[in-house]
Length: 146
Image 1 (cartoon, rainbow, N blue to C red):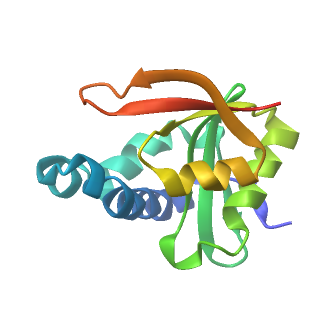
Image 2 (cartoon, rainbow, N blue to C red; image 1 turned 180 degrees about the horizontal axis):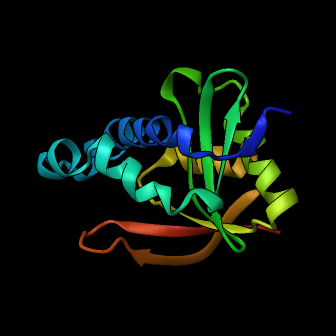
């Protein structure tokens, strides 16, 4: 098993994966250059994630390929490096979080159809609940694993 608790040495890689995924997946939806290319930066994000490390697991087989962050039964973040997507990294992290951390639900951007398809393949389905993403006109939908 290549899944382990995140360590301080992982912070820059976690932040790098999150920033790159955010730009690839969310910039086309939100279109905010200010946020995506000015506010969202690897170093400050790595510093922020230091206090969140206990909530994070990483997939590391010699290369840190992805991470998941949970809070109770909620999956807060799940990102696989874009270059390693489609290789089972995200599925392994999600299944581990379900089994070992009791993860049962998450919120996904309604327009992120690729993520929603991925979660449905992993047994997470829309509950019917949706909320506005704070500060935007975009909706998040709740997906639950039964």
